[in-house]
Length: 390
Image 1 (cartoon, rainbow, N blue to C red):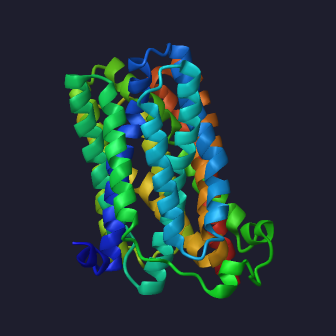
Image 2: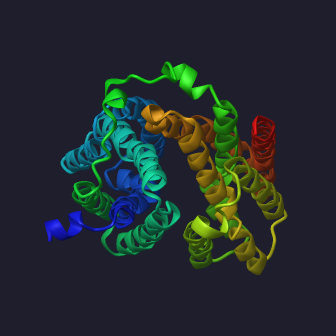
């Protein structure tokens, strides 16, 4: 079995890892607060633990990715994050002290979320070098996320909140196993020693329009803050049954899967800045339309825009960073993007969303048009810069 797995095509081995990781991440992301509650944490402490997990991602992901960028084999970095996640989640089992749980939440947020930019950079680099499409393997992860989300949610209804931890543990264990069969991802001797004509880290990440790419990606992705935090609450308050709320979320992820499957051929001619601009435009339409409280069929149609507001933005930044960030700093570039769009800027947007929902209900979706428009402008400026350079 081991030789057979090791001889599989690279794209298949990445698909296996993405599937294993997101199988667990689909339970971890929405349901760990349910586990915190099952362990007796108060709402205030649940909020603190959730915030600690986000802080762990913001702090650990760039630092861990910077270390990963210095390793001779990229697979070792992914395996290290996966193994660290597994050990941290195992440490959750006997813990009952609230402050110990908060501490573990910080560590888990850094390790489990921290692997995302590392594997993204690794997979995109291998896809570029070995000429296979990144989208289809990544879409396996999206499908596994749905499975983890729906499966763990169903089991929680039967067995309680402890299920969230054990499902996440299973996903982390599978991630470790599949990481063993990833390609080695050897670097050139010069890259492994840290020698690069691109100069230092700051120089590398502020050249070739990367600041505009960071800004465009972070702003458009962070504009999902109201959606992540309040869409279920807002839709249920508007009379949408809870079963349909889950179906709406699944529709968005399903659209994302189709987008990644089609991205290799149908979208290969679209430049990365234009992909991000497409994401910003779709986000602008999506959030303004949702603010008007459309009927259920229109809600489902608008969820299809997730393929662009998230998928096109995500893929556009990955392609741009792969093409313009030095190979030595590939994981670091993705980690900085993750820390901004999935951490600092998203946290600010989510915080503002609380006030928007309190004041306007589902009309608060309109607030997310502001970062969407700003991100669209950054992407357009990046596209203009690319045209001038060419």
